[in-house]
Structure formats: C-alpha cells, structure tokens
Image (cartoon, rainbow, N blue to C red; front, side):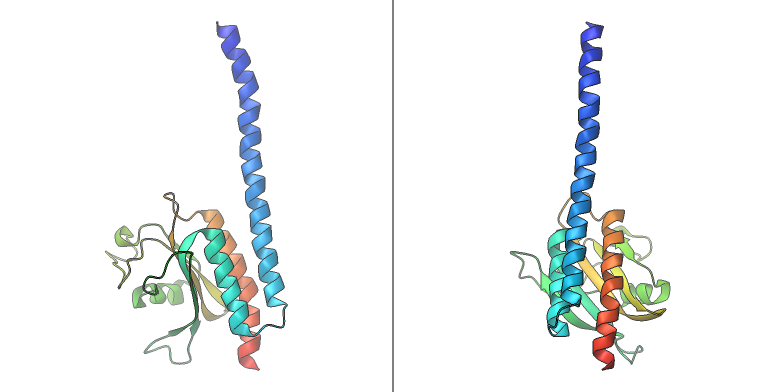
Length: 190
C-alpha cells in the first residue's frame, strides 16, 4: 500500500510544482501586458487626461479593485494638498467617489513610499480609520515621483479578492506610478 502512495506522491508532486510555476508565469505575462499598455498610452499623442484615464482604468481592471484615481499635488499644500485628476470605477460600480483622507494623504506626503493596507479600520498606522461615504476597506497607493519630488499619488481602492492586496500588486503599482510621473510632469510644465 505504501508503494502505491509513494507512486502517487511522485506523480503529483511535479504536477503541483508545474501548476504553481504556470500560475507564476501567467501572472508575469499579465503584468507585462499592463506595463506594455501603460507604455503605449504614455507614448501616444492622446491628451494627458485620456492617457492617465487609460492608466487608471488598466490598474482597476488588472488589480481587480472597485476604484482607482490619480491625485496631483497642488502648489498650496496647506489647505487641500491634492486635487483629483482622474477617477475610474470598476465594472458595475457607480458608488460614491473614494479618496484618501487627510490622514492618508499626510502619511503619503511624509513617508513618500507605497502604502498597502488591507484593513484600514484596524490598521495601527491610522488609528481606527473609517472612510468617508463609501467605506474604503483596503487601499494601495504609490507616490508619483520625479527627480525626488512628489507630484501626486496613484491609488486603488477595495481589492475584490478576499486575500487583499499583495506585495506583487504593490510592486506593479509602484512601477506604473514611476512610468506615469514623467508624462504627467512634462504635460503640466509645458
């Protein structure tokens, strides 16, 4: 009996390993596809609002979230430091606009790195946060940076999968934010 079990184990172990590798490769291809779409949009002659809208739309679809937005840093950082440039909702979602609160914006301004929280309400960094209007359960935000200067934030809200945002999601959004920052800056400086 143990010989049969050993044979089954020997057969299924490589199959499981191949299945995991196949999933990893599929994810890599999906990431390359979105990065290609972003690069194509950035190099197009479309108006900036269309380009940024397309980038946010691709992030919403690929990361399977309820909404995404790009907010730009205004010159007056004291009152309302950010203004929303583009906001996109996922399919079938017409809810209230989701946005980072002053506390989350402040965290992004202070830390200048990506923010990943799959449970904002219980996140120790934000002490009992509860989102205004439509509740934001999870958020992933990456700063838009150019030559060490903050110019805005790319954010996605409420991951649809129960596992929430992953480190791979965070890495991908950071890459997209980095690619997008130059295009946004060039358009606003001219």
